[in-house]
Length: 152
Image (cartoon, rainbow, N blue to C red; front, side):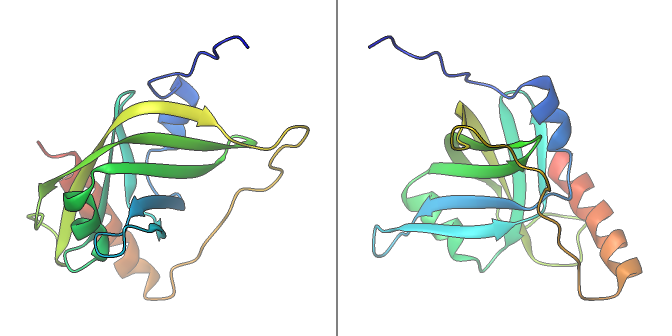
């Protein structure tokens, strides 16, 4: 059987797609049970074709999971398909500055990008979500979080 070439970086379309405000599923290995765990995250932004950053609250179990085992998978539904982005994650900041919430900054170094949609189908509608708190405050917070995520 021929070996399939698997990209080790984001395509330009996927890079542009991951410029914030997308629902992404994050798979980690649970620190205590060693079982797989999946969480929905939305503060996600691609830095370049090889790195993605995201933010979660400082008390999230995701942080302990990544510290115990840095291997993660980001599942992205969009561009008419489903992508599984495998990589190694690292906590860059335990608590980001310039953000009114206690949020950690995490970076994923991409190892593989798989198209994981089942054969013979395409996504006809991307997942959408709505923030259930003050829309103006949510937008203000999002701007601060995305700025802090990209600060070096």
